[in-house]
Length: 319
Length: 265
Image (cartoon, rainbow over all chains, first blue to last red; front, top):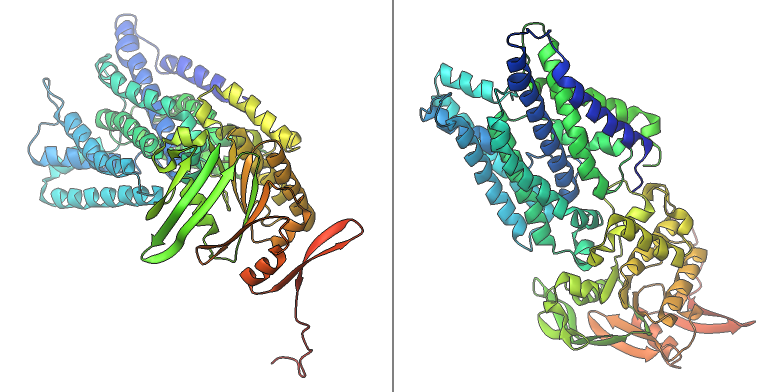
């Protein structure tokens, strides 16, 4: 449980990236500078940090609760549900932008929660095994995808474009409305995961062993999956599905030396902040005058980073 | 602390696994549960731990219905060493042992201190910072026993604790188990390695229980004169205790195989 040198580096790097990020970009105009800084750059970095931290910590917790290194925040169908919700809303004629009500956000949130409730409900049922729940998550995702494809086939070109734009993930913000809306949901996720940290630690020995060590396994996994899903649903609803973050960051944190789950989840939260903020920087800068969708960058940056770490002999030692 | 299985029957898809089993385990006792593969030994432990539903009978811990206990209450009385333990995360031995202290609801630092104490009790303090994946089979088993002790339950249910260990490590493990009973734990130890019985002291508090096809075959003190005969009957082999120079063995007799006239094939 010792915080190793590499872990410290991870923490400092995140602090440096998040602190520096708003400074990166073209020089600020004296007239509009204050607006650009406080209403565009800072909220965007804050949003990237919150979303990155949430997706990563939920990913770490899901990998622990499923005892499966391939689990991600969307394993239980959250992202698929959100995409389906948006598709349904767009096909039903919801405006893609509205001053009064963010219809797409609401539809995504409803879709994400609907799929998750099915899977988390199964998790709360005592006799279900963890791989049953994993399978249920995959089944729900596939079903949502199939219904989505059916809806897409009746959508017109404009509607399809709206959905495809939304599903690439986006972090730009004007002001702090998004941050204020998201924070309560993210707080539910973070508190839920922190409350169950010790149970997640015990679950590394398997569900039966954890049960005999005193863990109320159905409750622990329902709280972890449920609280995590609330946070992820909020992130996906506001920013669209941003892939790879929740899969890759926990593995990078493990390779950096965080062995115990009691360290892994909080460190993934911190490292995820740094990771998504840096991905967003790359998305802003790599093509001058044009912004890439951040989801493209997370995959393009994250996958090689993970491969590099896996191949790095020092990181593999002692595993 | 007293664990009582009273007329316990368990069926799985209409196949009887345990039938009308009576068994008592008190603190300070060592009960060795033996029987052929498939006799229901592991199921018996899992039933006591509330991991399997009973079809008939009762399991009580100091008179309380064990199947109705909350997980944390049961964990304060019973600790379990499963037959095959697997750990899904790359952790150190100390982290793995610390996880067993869930029921105390303590800080990570205190859990780690408790893990060190448990590791020291099994002479594995030096393994604390080693990654689980780098341990040998014997070291792993020692760490697994430390995890059981870290839970600080009076009654310990150990499932094949010496499996996959070399003869020397097996002997050390059984010595450790006997010492735990002398220190006041009640130990129910499942094994099909009957040879280990020869190394245990013939105290009144040490019993051997035979299980065959889910039924209790015998429940006798280790010093019982009929034990070798009962074991022979249980396994369908000829077993006998032999003593020489202050050492004892439980020997399995084999029929002398005649050399084949021609090589096979």
